[in-house]
Image (tube, rainbow, N blue to C red; front, side):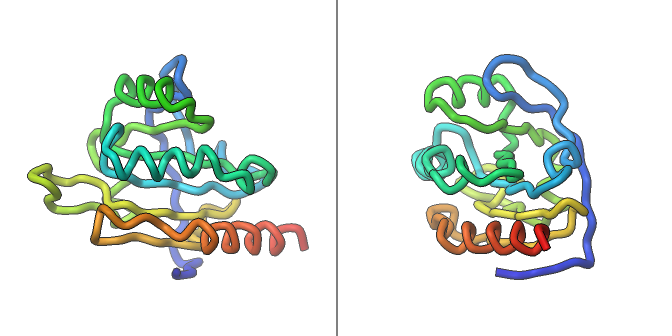
Length: 163
């Protein structure tokens, strides 16, 4: 886990919540709260599917106001629409086909399973100012994050914002 207030970021990517493709701006999802960015290699891969469904099923996220989850991979919005539909996902998936946001957050494999420039499995929590408050990433794409650690970081961020 790391905490940094040195880097302030914003971005805009195409994405979907399953119906229409729209433009998603980070600042729209941090206004008055926080955003959890979930970087993952591929829609429909076994470990990614389990991880993304874990966010769907995380009750603490469903009942925590002012926290938006945004999934980010290099898959197209068309693949995302199908992934959302098949697994009944409750948050947007964004398409970083050029890898610019993935590179900006420094969460890119040079090569993984013969695919170049794939996003690492990573979590980033940003506050209302777009400062990175929490970052977890792994070199092992089969490793999954500690959801309890993420929950504690988000709740402490929101507790700090309420003061």
